[in-house]
Image (cartoon, rainbow, N blue to C red):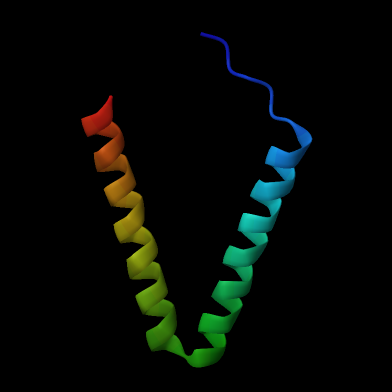
Length: 58
C-alpha cells in the first residue's frame, strides 16, 4: 500500500510539535539536572510504551 503524501498542515503541525519539545527541553535545562533526567526518563518510557502498543495492535 502506498503512503499518502503529507499535506501542508501535517508538516506545519509536526514542525510545531518539534518546536514545543525543544522549548520543553530548554525549560528542563533551566530547572536543573534532575528535571532533565525526569524528562528523558518519561520520554523513554512513552517511546517504549508506544512500541509495545504498536506490536500488540498490529
